[in-house]
Image 1 (cartoon, helix red, strand yellow):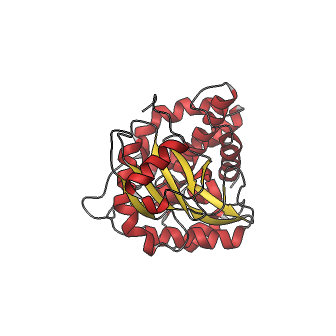
Image 2 (cartoon, rainbow, N blue to C red):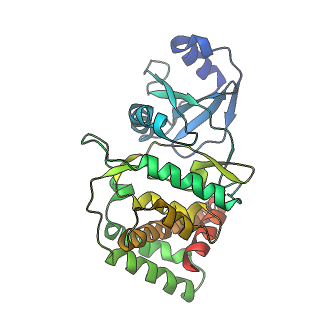
Length: 295
């Protein structure tokens, strides 16, 4: 996959072969994440093609499950409309989805609090339904936090001073001491951070990138209260969600801490010229930690 050039010519070949009704639409390459390259198709659709080893399976997973869940979600998501088959020209699956209008939240953070909080709560309540037995499980997204102890210890190095480290350790220790989730696994997005939401006029307008969706602990997603919302709105989000006990909140804070630190690390990596670095993530991670550690 790393040697394959993904360009407009390739995408037109793929569309002509499997979706000729879309092949003559205007194509524009747009901002992509780690796993996929994304192009806008006309005004209302997008095509994503995997560019990492794990991305193909995530595309198939998203097509399988988000197609069923999307009609029940109250805010825009990238609804799958076509799963591209493997060919000699492109030996991996690819996907066509609806386009979700807005700017990524790591470029344009959510500034409007009340309506964005209501939208996030409605999304979580609608998504967090009991998952079927054959739903995917993603250990890296919903395993007990204790399994990430070494990762957390490494990430502490990104904090600027001993006071910040001490506050982070308190949040982490409270999260580890919380009782585990004992309910049935529910559907979770599992990757709700600023670059996986879109924002219009400062307001949460959609959720994207469901490749990591899986069955697990709702605390994993509830961490978004600190990752996404303006200061002071996390507690309102938790209260409105309405299914939270103290243990779930502590686990959610632990997940928010872990992801905030990881975002800062990715931003620092970009400053150092690392290929896996994400230049816009440092500021987003710092903002999340500020909201979390000063609450």
